[in-house]
Length: 216
Length: 216
Image 1 (tube, each protein chain N blue to C red):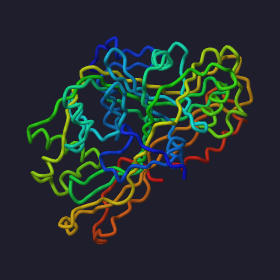
Image 2 (image 1 turned 180 degrees about the vertical axis):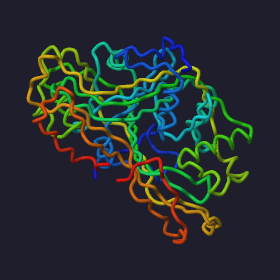
Image 3 (image 1 turned 45 degrees about the horizontal axis):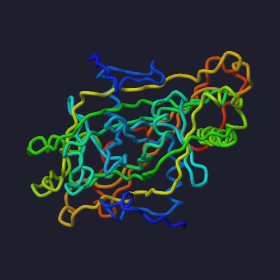
Image 4 (image 1 turned 90 degrees about the horizontal axis):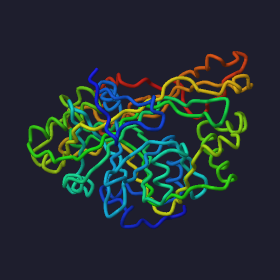
């Protein structure tokens, strides 16, 4: 495991036993999450905006329109937070007070920089695309020069971050254990319905195999 | 529909056709999401922290330990953002550039206040508990005075917010429609596995019915 040293800003203070300071499990959480929430400040107001992202090695790429206010602001060097959260279950205790959820989250702090060179931009777009569906980069039409120019990509280094994880059963007080209340965990995960072909999709084309998600 | 007037800060600028400025669909998004992401600033650094929350009428409650730095900070009147995001599907276009996800998100801006009176605190805890599982408030042991005192509850009014929604198929350029690439949407939703009883749970107690989630 590659340990990371928490800073005063990333050390988990509430429920400190839930803090995780290793790269491998933190990266696994980042890789499983489709969406991150980016926090930044404009004119004294914090904003939290969801967006797609992908990790490549020790950096996180995120992107948007070159005209996006958020990306212009962050590309100019404003401090930011990038947070992902996976909900793994509902934790039902015997007491109201000890209800909770099981989750895995990562909070990254830092400053992003604009990705200028075309090779890194392509690397980022490949990572975004293959995160949505493994192998998709090789199947779909590649971006044109104009499309690349219309996309702003930002790079956030994974230097200062920590993960927080709750797993396992409810924790009730001893005196509550005999209460006639069912207690346990309802596991939750993202699952997929049947693929919906676009109306103009040639019916002879087979949908890709979506192995990542269980089917409902 | 109860229309809301977007402010300069909440009007959707990117992809403006995705902006939703009605209370009912925005509240439905807030009610479906288990976790929100709260953004705030400390010493020049934005933080984004996931937490549980619940809506009651035109306010959102969120809570945590009375010793939480985040709650102390926000209770003192720091401006904040509260954002929820539901991922509804992966949108596979014929071109890399037009890949996307279907989602529903709400961004709330404002300032929270500490909930002091016990009646409102109970209302909030009931909302949190019944959000995890409908009817659970009536089944589990109610909070004691000490447990109520150990819980900080904050109230954020739903005054300034907007929703953003992407639905539907991929949007490819006309010249891409003939490419031999499957295009469409993979619908995603949270689903539940089999309930896991706590090891000390009386096996004669039946698990509750979890009607909200499909089973995988």
